[in-house]
Image 1 (cartoon, rainbow, N blue to C red):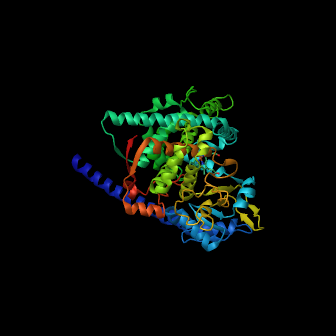
Image 2: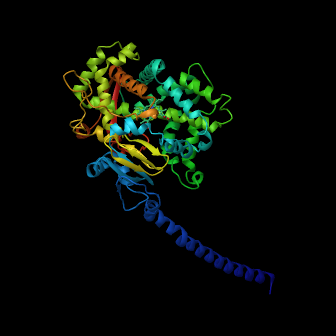
Image 3: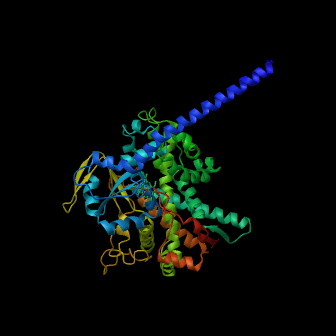
Length: 520
Ligand code: HEM
């Protein structure tokens, strides 16, 4: 046998052996799939809930509405239109019911008195789940270590000190100046390129304007100038990537590589933030807190960047769509536009940022509340930290399992025709309390209790100032088809996908939100 023949024989034998091993490996692989993974999936999808019910149920649990797929529950139906879905369940099952959403048990309780006045104060109902979801799952922080310290309590104290009271006026003035400056810059740019009338998408235009004005107010001009390159795009990327990063899945850094990269690109920008005179007091005090002897060894650069990045996100993400929808509502309703413009004529615009001036704008205030009432997905949640039995004001007893999410759906109230006749239509003066009318029911947009949104006053002021500036400084024409205008007047429609936020226009109707504008 020649050497060549020998090697050919050996190679053939090797290949045959290889094929055999490969076939064996494939069989083992499928065996594992069939014997372990598939039963596991079946268990999770169909049986987990039954086992859970058997082992963990507690007395006086509210009725649980079953779905075919126990792990997913009604997640898909919920995501399509949470407002209609929850209202449907409320009409069918009353004020108290449980549903499975995103592999969690949500106990809905539509009883404002009990929720806001009694249950929210119960120390066994916490927001730990949301903190953990945001900081641990969303940002990959070592939350177990950080939550043992007082840092979160300190940050909450700072929010209440520096987003409200006297500091609020400084924030108002700063964002007013920023908005004006951006508007002037835009006007100059348009004049330089000899275009007097520009066509843009309203949401894109306002979002960028508010992003830069908000960031300049909180983090200062120096920071914004340093970050200018792709900063806004980086924020938009973060917006898309962050909800994906919240997913609790194995091998996350591998499967979600691209989203995590986008998230980190945004938060890296805040990692080396230094105190600067043009920053807001809130940010200066935060930087001091993070670098204090107590916390400087606890927090990594990634933690610091994440805390800053999420604050800016919280400040912008809901303010922008709500400002846009408020403006759209006003532009779509000539009687509202007329009344708001008249009201704006009664104030000194150069003092718009002052408390007294903003308080005078009662019609604009009513318009904004009327928009928020119809757009915000009001769901306030607290998680049971252990099995607990709660008593409602009317004596109903609610048994909650550890980790159940007790949820107050304020959206049911906001769209209740008994409280707000013709609930989907925009009645611009609905919230103007006239002496002869009985007072209008309150709305709950910013949550409640100790963790209620600390930026709520600033948010409303920002929206007021932005809408007032647009209506007084610009000529704006909505380039919307008449049939779509009619549709929106009957009922606003928007994307529901931003779980932690409220949405912009439906993707397929984005084109309807183009505006033509020029400066006066
Ligand atoms: C229209 C605009 C806004 C809406 C609808 C909104 C809504 C909310 C809601 C519902 C919560 C959770 C409250 C709870 O679960 O009880 C929240 C939390 C928060 N919001 Fe806002 N918000 C807005 C604007 C702002 C602004 C302008 C800021 C300014 C920085 C801000 C800062 C925060 C912060 C820091 C938290 C977390 C507080 C904590 O950890 O306890 N928000 N917001």
